Length: 110
Image (cartoon, rainbow, N blue to C red; front, top):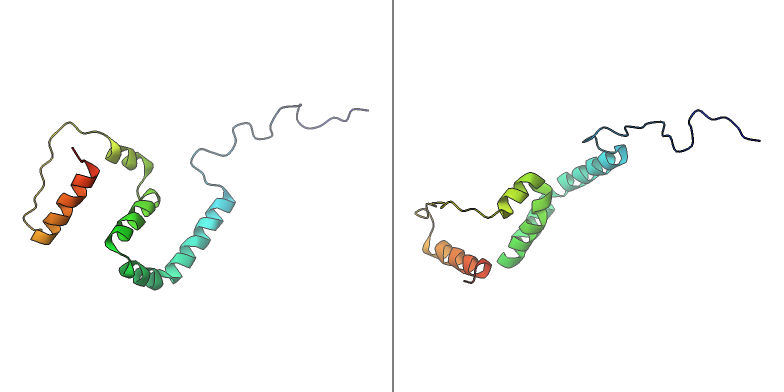
C-alpha cells in the first residue's frame, strides 16, 4: 500500500536551497569557536611567530593569506600585469634592498 506524502518523489521541500552566500549554521559556529580560541591565544601566537626563522615567517604568511585576502583579490594578485609599476625604495635600508633582490631572484630567476 502506497502512502501519500507532501512531496512527489524527487521533489525537494526547499527547491531553491539555502540562499547563495549564506553560511551553514554549523560552519558559522565553528568559525566563531575558532575565532574565540585564536583571540585567547594571540599573545602566544605572536611569541611563536617572533621565534621563527625569516623563511618560516614568509611560509606562515603565505599559508595564512587565503584566510585573510578575498579570493577575487588573490586572483588579481596572481594575474600577469602588462603595465609598468613604479616602486619607491628610498625608505629601505641596504639590508632590506639586498633581501628584496634575493627574493625577486628566487621568484623570477630569468
